[in-house]
Every structure is written in structure tokens, then in C-alpha cells.
Length: 226
Image (cartoon, rainbow, N blue to C red; front, top):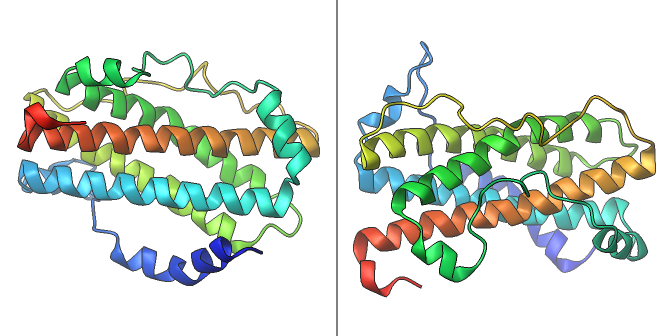
């Protein structure tokens, strides 16, 4: 186990305690829990959530590689052309495209990404439970990210209402057709598929963080955003 994994093990308990709460739903399922927070503070909390989700997804991916995927298989995975499940979504890709899209599209892009990953991460928890010797650290991280992603979705939905004056949104962007989990693959194929899911989610988590930070920058210094 390398030093990066050692530090991840040491810091994991404290990471759970420093996360600012973002749970918006109350007992009746409404989102009024976040509506009382100012737009600025809500955006800060959403960004903080996205940062933590990305950080933990990086750690999970590295831990998975060390535990289940020797380097030749990592190379094979990168060359096999496994497509990310969100590849078909209309996402800006280049820096110039990201800079040109509106605040509305930044928020809706984040929402599309978040909602597209909710079911696949639940599937990932289920499939990794079947692994022999899967470390609790990896399973706990995967569950933590899955739970926080739902909180992030709730926060983004309220943020859309606050910033764009739009009504509360249902789950508009469905992952149906993007992700199929009804067929149980062989073990090696399952490992490769799960690694692809983790790798793709890490990339999309970074996109969520980038889009939200750009949105924050536009609120404070519109003409000097990277």
C-alpha cells in the first residue's frame, strides 16, 4: 500500500466530520430545508459537497486499482474503449465551450450529471459487496459518495430555483438507457466494468466541481473567470 492510501486511511474519519450538511429534504419529502439558506451560502455548500465527492472518488479509484487491478489490466482498460455512461449527454467539453454556456446550462449540466450517476453508484455498492476481501474502506467510501450525491442533487435543485427562479424540478434527466445492470458479468469483466464506472464517475465529479466553481466565479468576478 503506497503513502497516498495510508493518508487516505488516516484522513477518512475526519473527512466524514468536516462535511457541511446539505440535506434539504424534510420528513414530508419537501426541499424547504435548504430554501431558508441564502443563495451565496447554498452555493458554497454545494461546491464544498462537490469537492468532497470528487476527492473521495479519487481515493476510491486509487484504492480499487491497488486492490483489484494490476497495472496490465489498468492498461487494458484504458485501451479497451469502455464508454462512460454519460458520454451521450449534451455536455460542454472544451474550455471555450464551458466559458460560453450560460449559468442556467451550467446548473442543468451539473444536475444531469448528478442524476445520471445515482443509480449506477447504487449498483456499484451491490456488485462490490460480492467481491472477496473487498476492504471496508472502499465499500464505505462508495456508500458515502452515493449518499452525498443525493444530497448534492437536492442542493442543486434548490439552487436552480433560487438562481433561475424556476419551479422545483423532478428528476428530469434519467439514466435509463445509459446504464444497464440486469446482466451479471463474469468476475474479471465485472472488475473491469466497475473500474470503468469508478473512473468515469471521477471524471464527471471533477466536471461537477469545475462547473459549480465557474458559476461561483461568475457571481463575484464575471469578467476574470478562468
